[in-house]
Image 1 (cartoon, rainbow, N blue to C red):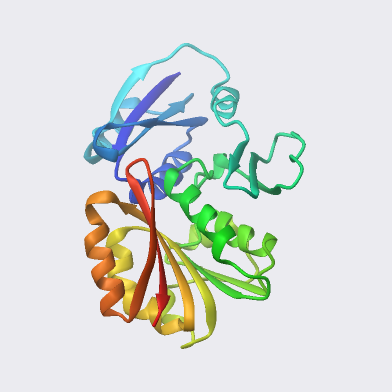
Image 2 (image 1 turned 90 degrees about the vertical axis):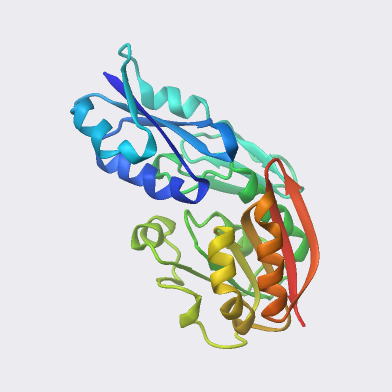
Length: 262
């Protein structure tokens, strides 16, 4: 039994964790790292530690021996249910904790590695969704990941929810009926009322014109995955695309912006 420790940028985490699972990891825990980066410790029963360290060298991989134990249960024990915002109750799918009164239950599978809701950026977007979404809206989730935001939109009464991701594994994991592999450029102009884009500052800047193109006049964009030093770039890109920044919200090192089509 050994573990492999790696560090990455937050926007790299989902794909990196998926890769570690594919290499045979029996459990993965997430740790804080310096500079807002993400630290991951993946545990292995039967693998070549030296080869894995070389394969993940660009992530500063280091391997160490570990005592034998049930690392899957250990990883699960570190993921208790969470109350997010005023409406949501996020709970790992293997737990049977009762849903608190007045809360909307979202079951997550951290073992699939595409989002547990624990990240501050996801929490910011969930909090904005419960404030901005009105029943009957048509919603697009750009970068669907585990589908947490798409599921939240459905629970809040959205009429239809679409999701897209450039990673086919993410779309498969999200298991949303209206999800597709691709980007927002495939979506019809002025066809949705609200967009969630919990991706990265760089991606939002690149997609800003398309994000504003696909929402109807007065429609809302909730943009997350933005580290504090990157906020100015994202605000400029959204304004240049025709949006008015309505509000900004901070949690830790992260910010979410709410913008409306002018």
